[in-house]
Amino acid sequence: DWSSDVCSSDLSQYGLGRYREALAAFSQVLSFETTEKDDDAQLMIARSYLALGEKDQAVSAFRRMLSEHPDSEYTETARKELRYLGGP
Image (cartoon, rainbow, N blue to C red; front, side, top):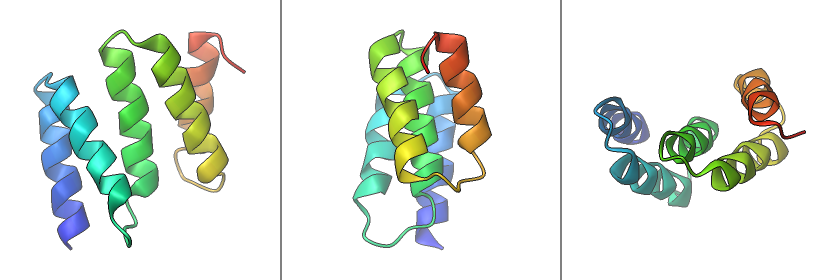
């Protein structure tokens, strides 16, 4: 499906170290009305901020992921990242 394709190309940007571009692309995924990739995108937004050295934005993005997607398969990953960053 198209949202999977978008997420794949966004991951490519992230993998190439193009974190600003990846951040913009993952943010666009969140604007789609119907997607099953919103928790993936939110996690990668947080990781993109982290890779850019923007710790406060990363913490906020991880918290948003936890609050908006409490049943996500990435919940434990987000919690671990927050502990690493010194956030609750």
